[in-house]
Image (cartoon, rainbow, N blue to C red; front, top):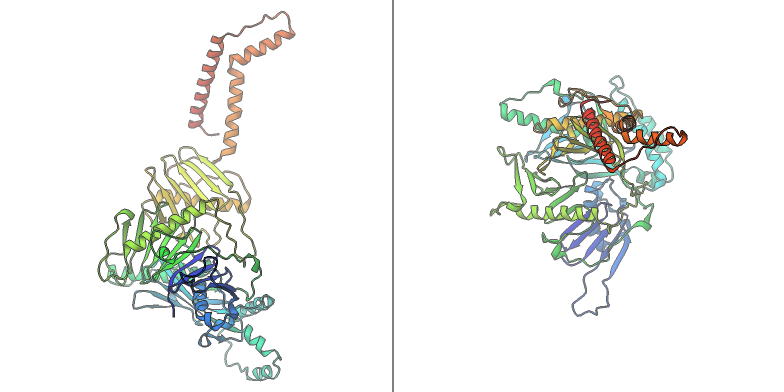
Length: 600
């Protein structure tokens, strides 16, 4: 069987796979359709002859392409938002049948959870019912989830699944009642078997489940996996404390979530695509030899790239970040917009002392014989992928990426300023409609982060938020809100601003609110809306000029002299006009000085 040379998942979640024998397979964003380019033509073939292409439905693929399609679909489901799980492509040993719908999982509390440690230093959190499992890598920067997911169904069965999901959640809540025991349902089971419907195969298909696997980065992941990830991270931190202090200590004050948490599983995409006309296929010729080199990378918006067993993941945001996952538990992440520096979060099982190290793009370490991968090669390729991604994002030639399975189509909306305030002596605070919050301080430091993400709240996900800091000398760094202490002064001010914006957006209020001194001690003055300040400045300047300008008084006397013949005409000379302009300029400077010392 031919091996895979290069795999790419684009932002619309379509997949492009290149093989060693020259074939190329493309998956639609929903995964329900594929197109494969067969073996390339011989060198002696006519130039007008094109390569033979086969386009089929994924679930009805023939045996010749079944292995290729299954492997490509597995790669897509691992990094996509929603998996595509047709019954025809699920292995027999992976098929499971449940009488009730499994749409959510119940996690135990922090003090009674089942956490296991792997031989490579990874942390595994399992649900009591066995329907979900989260595995945190030894570096603590990425994790994999395995959960029970129903196979892809027709759209007509969606409402039935939702009703069964409500029944399943009610059953989960009732399962904790200790008073219910020794209940015999054998009679009901016999009656149920006696009154089975004729369409038993259809019912069996609706109750067919399998195991789905997805992988995420701690910098960007769905909210549904936040609680089990929190359990794994706390266990990893406790192991670190145990190694440093020599004993394991659990502080009850650090455990915040004592109650049972529920996580809703992602639903599988329907078997039939709702918009097959939006499937976009790539017919241009691509040389796989150049793709394997660090110099040539696709110029489209990519999400995940697989090359020589290494995963390259691009995380979009205020500053795009590329992550490298070699597969042995460590993770390499870029820093800054130019990605000149890369931080290597090493596996804690293999590196007890040195957990992190920083690489400079122009001074990468040399290759060492016997190492699993070349740091120089993977970092160079990741830098090139990020560079091409930024170019494609800012290019006007890049086509709008629309996923065929999404109900809400993507649109190019203009970014507007939602709220903007100015703190005298501190800086400017701004919130944009694309979810970006920005603070520009008077000392030249600029801080940016997201404020409209629905995946976290100020009380629940403040520990997982990231902030981009740009210093006056141009140095940029990506810091985590709860762990960074170097830039705590700037991060705390930005977090307070984001929370204030979300609160005012919910209440639809535009009144100014003073930032508490506990957030940052760099100011004791209230925040005032900038629009109000600018209007007050205009009014006061106009009144000052109207009352103190000799030019306006002279003009007024001239106008009154036209009505009264006993007033003599006042002549304006160049010296008079120059003197008036100088006085006006001095008055404006005095107003600016007064406004900087007082606030209205």
